[in-house]
Amino acid sequence: MQINLRRQIGELPWGYFTLAILLLLIGMVTLFSISHQQVPGMGNTFYKQSIFIMPALLLFIIVIHIPRTFIHKYAYIAYIFGIVAVLVPYALPLRAGTHRWISFGLPFAIQPSEFVKIITIIAVSRYLSDQSNKKMKFMTALIIPFIIILIPTAIVLKQPDLGTAVVMVAPIMPILYWAGARPYHLFLLVAPLLSVLTGFNSIAFAVWGISLGIILYMSKPKILIGIGLYFSNIFLGLLSPILWNSLQPYQQKRVLTLFDPSKDPYGAAYQILQSITAIGSGGFWGKGWREGTQTHLKFLPVQESDFILSVIGEELGFVTIAIILCLFSIMIIKTIKFSAFSNDRFSALVLIGIATILISHVFVNTAMTVGLIPVKGLPLPFISAGGSFLLSSFLMIGLVMNLSENHST
Image (cartoon, rainbow, N blue to C red; front, side, top):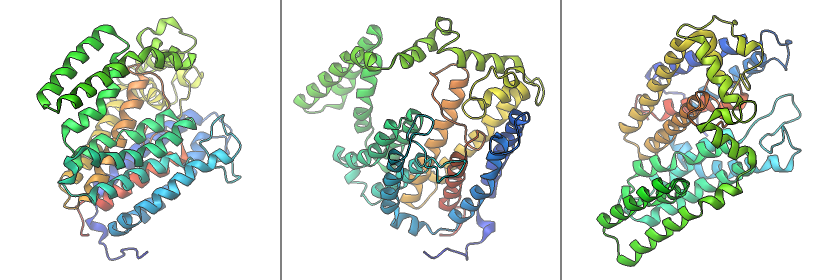
């Protein structure tokens, strides 16, 4: 591989990098507050996170200098290595009850799925960028991209890691739309999921059934195909009770307590209630750095990663949360703009995929902390603790800056 050393550093969109550094600083300040009573060493959250900063920046520097032709050429090879990487933990002893980690015999471990979600986006983008716009108008053109994404997603889901699996599959619809797929075909792909979700409520299911019939009628498919699509979706909706019964009891409780936390305040709803209490007690300006009672009395669970936004809300207030959301919004909008103005089809698809990953992480983490969705572990980019996640976050912004049109190719 020949690294493009001739690229002018000044041509890169360094304002984008600044957004990531600001978010990282907020995260490190918060982690220092969380861990200031912990014993120095590998058990200290702030210390562990600090170790990964330099490798993350080094990875970023390497990525911004890799020619995009190299990334495109070796996308499939990277994908194969990624599949192998997420399979390796299955051959290792369980760590924290899961098959997510590769230890290397060190106090910390690497979570390969954090990198595979990005590699998968690159592989899908490679496939779609090699297809003609005419071919993308056919439903069959969507099969291979789905297979490329579903293989690693299924492996990660089995580890089990539902949060990462959701993030891995989330970019498929935006990428396919960006690649020129027909909205009607994308609707047909989403319809089975909507059928299952609405099947839990008779009124919602009836409304969905009518809407589905109208959409299929207006789309004018062949009669037999239209009838088949309609009744297959209705059948899936009728299977919803079976799917509900297949969930583990703790998963059912998480869904039920989303609508009524008082059902299990010391069990499934405990995390949500403590998170809401922490954010609410912080008010507009917060209680002050290292002054959070919910945080330091350990009422708030998983405060260094999944619920770090709750710590920020308690200690630094709503104003800091608003700043964080503004920084993420600017970052995501910039990524989408880079994609929209890109003259390279492959780069545009990778960028829209990364934008979707960022949106997924920010939305799920934020909505979870205020009780809008069931609790599912998903960290906040650049802010939450996690070495693998920090490395993958800087890998993403390195790719964005590399593939943006703000510099010569």
